[in-house]
Length: 128
Image (cartoon, rainbow, N blue to C red; front, top):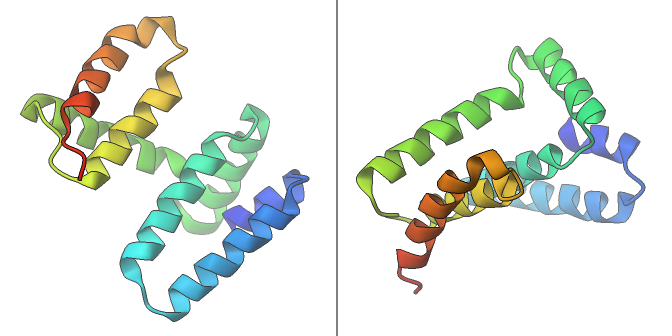
């Protein structure tokens, strides 16, 4: 549903169509981990929509499924808080979550302390 909405709002139909094909292939191969990554990527992509489109998409999701993208945001913020309290990143998923948060807030001057804290954790995470 999210990708169909994005196709209706976006001129870059080719990339969205390719993404749909990848998701279908991932689904058909029963790759649950791959589907989770696809879901996270699509949600991140949706966050990049213009505010009016994002609000419209959230309303459609709320009407159809009883949930919107805000639920994921709250869950992610909770996970980020847990990582900060722990003082270290323990997995690649946590690393991606923190990196995504930094990308989301780095231009917000009121969030510079959070950016600094997250960047410190990101730098300390051992690359494999």
